[in-house]
Image (cartoon, rainbow, N blue to C red; front, side, top):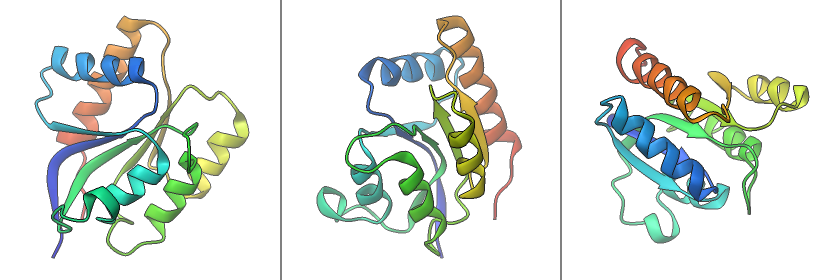
Length: 145
Protein backbone atom coordinates (compact mmCIF):
# COMPACT_ATOMS: atom_id res chain seq x y z
CA UNK A 1 0.00 0.00 0.00
CA UNK A 2 1.28 3.42 -0.93
CA UNK A 3 1.30 6.13 1.66
CA UNK A 4 1.15 9.79 0.96
CA UNK A 5 4.06 11.56 2.51
CA UNK A 6 3.32 15.03 3.80
CA UNK A 7 5.64 16.41 1.15
CA UNK A 8 5.44 18.66 -1.87
CA UNK A 9 7.31 17.72 -5.03
CA UNK A 10 8.24 20.87 -6.94
CA UNK A 11 9.26 20.29 -10.55
CA UNK A 12 10.89 23.57 -11.54
CA UNK A 13 13.98 24.40 -13.59
CA UNK A 14 14.18 28.11 -12.75
CA UNK A 15 16.28 28.62 -9.58
CA UNK A 16 14.59 31.99 -8.91
CA UNK A 17 11.15 30.34 -8.93
CA UNK A 18 12.42 27.59 -6.61
CA UNK A 19 13.68 30.23 -4.21
CA UNK A 20 10.37 32.12 -4.41
CA UNK A 21 8.43 28.93 -3.72
CA UNK A 22 10.60 28.13 -0.68
CA UNK A 23 10.16 31.66 0.67
CA UNK A 24 6.43 31.63 0.04
CA UNK A 25 5.96 28.30 1.82
CA UNK A 26 8.03 29.48 4.78
CA UNK A 27 6.27 32.85 4.96
CA UNK A 28 2.91 31.06 4.97
CA UNK A 29 4.02 28.60 7.69
CA UNK A 30 3.59 25.61 5.40
CA UNK A 31 6.04 23.26 7.06
CA UNK A 32 5.73 20.31 4.68
CA UNK A 33 8.98 19.02 3.26
CA UNK A 34 9.74 20.39 -0.19
CA UNK A 35 11.55 18.13 -2.61
CA UNK A 36 12.80 19.94 -5.71
CA UNK A 37 13.71 18.37 -9.04
CA UNK A 38 14.95 20.49 -11.92
CA UNK A 39 13.75 18.81 -15.11
CA UNK A 40 11.13 16.40 -16.34
CA UNK A 41 13.47 13.41 -16.51
CA UNK A 42 14.54 13.94 -12.90
CA UNK A 43 10.87 14.21 -11.85
CA UNK A 44 10.10 10.85 -13.42
CA UNK A 45 13.23 9.29 -11.89
CA UNK A 46 12.17 10.62 -8.49
CA UNK A 47 8.58 9.39 -8.76
CA UNK A 48 9.48 5.97 -10.15
CA UNK A 49 12.65 5.47 -8.03
CA UNK A 50 15.07 5.27 -10.94
CA UNK A 51 18.58 6.58 -11.52
CA UNK A 52 19.91 8.64 -8.62
CA UNK A 53 16.61 8.01 -6.78
CA UNK A 54 16.77 4.21 -7.05
CA UNK A 55 17.26 3.92 -3.27
CA UNK A 56 14.27 6.14 -2.42
CA UNK A 57 11.38 4.39 -0.63
CA UNK A 58 8.93 3.65 -3.49
CA UNK A 59 5.99 3.52 -1.09
CA UNK A 60 6.38 7.17 -0.11
CA UNK A 61 4.65 9.40 -2.61
CA UNK A 62 4.19 13.17 -2.52
CA UNK A 63 0.99 14.66 -1.19
CA UNK A 64 0.95 17.08 -4.13
CA UNK A 65 3.11 17.84 -7.18
CA UNK A 66 3.64 21.41 -8.38
CA UNK A 67 4.65 20.97 -12.01
CA UNK A 68 6.10 23.54 -14.39
CA UNK A 69 5.40 22.91 -18.07
CA UNK A 70 8.46 24.40 -19.74
CA UNK A 71 11.12 21.96 -18.55
CA UNK A 72 14.37 20.65 -20.02
CA UNK A 73 14.81 17.00 -21.08
CA UNK A 74 11.13 15.99 -20.68
CA UNK A 75 8.45 18.67 -20.83
CA UNK A 76 5.81 19.03 -18.12
CA UNK A 77 2.95 17.71 -20.24
CA UNK A 78 4.86 14.47 -20.89
CA UNK A 79 5.61 14.19 -17.16
CA UNK A 80 1.91 14.67 -16.39
CA UNK A 81 0.95 12.02 -18.93
CA UNK A 82 3.37 9.48 -17.39
CA UNK A 83 2.11 10.28 -13.88
CA UNK A 84 -1.49 9.64 -14.93
CA UNK A 85 -0.66 6.46 -16.85
CA UNK A 86 1.00 4.78 -13.87
CA UNK A 87 -1.06 2.94 -11.25
CA UNK A 88 1.23 4.09 -8.42
CA UNK A 89 1.05 7.81 -9.23
CA UNK A 90 -2.24 8.36 -11.05
CA UNK A 91 -4.10 9.70 -7.99
CA UNK A 92 -1.44 12.16 -6.81
CA UNK A 93 -2.81 15.70 -7.16
CA UNK A 94 -0.86 17.58 -9.82
CA UNK A 95 -1.00 21.37 -9.89
CA UNK A 96 0.41 22.84 -13.08
CA UNK A 97 2.25 25.93 -11.86
CA UNK A 98 3.57 27.68 -14.94
CA UNK A 99 4.29 30.99 -16.57
CA UNK A 100 2.57 29.79 -19.74
CA UNK A 101 -0.50 31.73 -20.73
CA UNK A 102 -1.12 29.56 -23.80
CA UNK A 103 -4.71 28.34 -24.09
CA UNK A 104 -3.43 25.09 -25.64
CA UNK A 105 -1.26 24.36 -22.57
CA UNK A 106 -4.30 24.90 -20.33
CA UNK A 107 -6.51 22.61 -22.43
CA UNK A 108 -3.87 19.90 -22.77
CA UNK A 109 -3.00 20.01 -19.05
CA UNK A 110 -6.60 19.33 -18.07
CA UNK A 111 -7.09 16.72 -20.80
CA UNK A 112 -4.04 14.84 -19.44
CA UNK A 113 -5.44 14.89 -15.90
CA UNK A 114 -4.11 17.99 -14.15
CA UNK A 115 -6.05 18.78 -10.98
CA UNK A 116 -5.41 22.49 -11.26
CA UNK A 117 -3.73 25.00 -13.58
CA UNK A 118 -2.22 28.11 -12.02
CA UNK A 119 -0.35 30.79 -13.89
CA UNK A 120 2.64 31.93 -11.81
CA UNK A 121 2.14 35.51 -10.71
CA UNK A 122 5.05 37.77 -11.59
CA UNK A 123 4.59 39.96 -8.51
CA UNK A 124 6.25 38.52 -5.37
CA UNK A 125 3.32 39.30 -3.04
CA UNK A 126 0.86 37.74 -5.49
CA UNK A 127 3.12 34.68 -5.78
CA UNK A 128 3.20 34.32 -1.99
CA UNK A 129 -0.59 34.55 -1.84
CA UNK A 130 -0.99 31.98 -4.62
CA UNK A 131 1.32 29.53 -2.84
CA UNK A 132 -0.53 30.14 0.44
CA UNK A 133 -3.85 29.30 -1.17
CA UNK A 134 -2.43 26.27 -2.98
CA UNK A 135 -0.83 25.01 0.22
CA UNK A 136 -3.98 25.44 2.27
CA UNK A 137 -6.17 23.73 -0.28
CA UNK A 138 -3.96 20.86 -1.50
CA UNK A 139 -2.24 20.08 1.81
CA UNK A 140 -4.98 20.72 4.38
CA UNK A 141 -8.47 20.94 2.88
CA UNK A 142 -8.32 18.49 -0.03
CA UNK A 143 -8.67 14.75 0.62
CA UNK A 144 -7.28 12.11 -1.70
CA UNK A 145 -7.64 8.33 -1.84
